[in-house]
Amino acid sequence: HFPLRRQRQMCIRDSPMPALAESREDKARAQILETSAALHKLLDDKEAFVAAYVEGKGDSYPVPPTVPFTVFQTLEKTAEPEFMEIAIDYAEAARGARDLIKLAKLTKKPVEVSIKEPGKPRLTQVTEYGAAKGSALASAKEYTERAVQEILAASICLDEAVKVMVAK
View 1 (cartoon, rainbow, N blue to C red):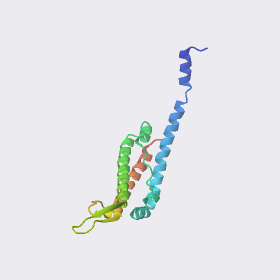
View 2: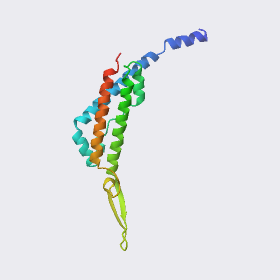
View 3: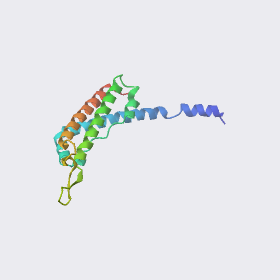
View 4: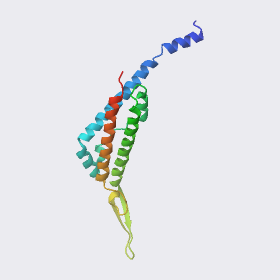
């Protein structure tokens, strides 16, 4: 039998951890590249994207999932210095786009509006939240067009991130 200390040393030295680290970095690079491609595809068809949300059919044009910040942190040690600044800009643009898309969807949600005038029975009607009196929401088109601008910003950030991440 090997002494216990010797067994531990062998386990650590023969460990697949370096391979796992490489694999993790490769997956992170792939996720950034895939998201960048998905954003470019969405921007190539931005008119249909806006029209879908205006018509209340936004689920047919989902925004690509956001690259988690931990993915950028995985590549930080091998990337150029400005990589994390670009990641922060991307995260802000992606969050802005996501929030604007939520607002665009909200304007299309049906709500019941109840109106009571003196001497008349209460009148209840179903309307879109954005069209309801006093909703203070802009139109779905405005929110979606602003979201497209944020998606463009996120796309540009990912393009820059790809340029400064160093492949092994």
